[in-house]
Length: 217
Image 1 (cartoon, rainbow, N blue to C red):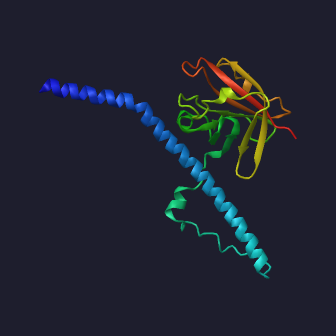
Image 2: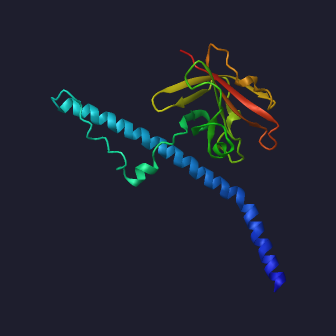
Image 3: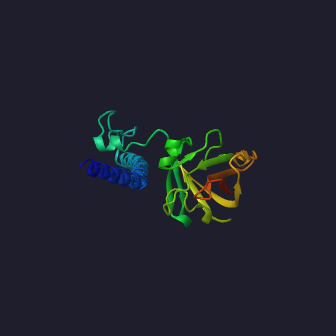
């Protein structure tokens, strides 16, 4: 009887160990999808509000614009409260060539990178002069996070969207460096650049794959 229980326990432990990576991926994929829904929902509300303002301005002879469409604080439906834009979400990263559409969180912490891409602290800001650096994991699952980043080549487009503006960068360099070669994050003080950072190769991560893009007028 004890042997049967021990065997059953070993089988259960084995199933948990084998299934953990997949369950973990499912969880973080769900978190990523939630961030995307929150982002989309918050900016749908903004567009809806703008439409309402235009309608009020066109249909009223009053000297002010009605703000009746704005919900009172704390009275939003539970679903809308859940879908409010997270405070640590900077925008969206879009790369059509590799079918990438990722939320960008502030700070490349371990927890943020488990879920999605994240900006590296003390680098530039999107769309501004400087080097806006964004890191992401090179997951084994095809297409997840920065898994396909190595497919980018010179001339490919990278778009970042902060909800108010879209900034388009053109890839001009792809290189592989050691983890300590942080010079790739530096700005030349003139150009508006973006640097995407991930591990290479996928299995060992001994180096960093760097994709650099530049905004042009």
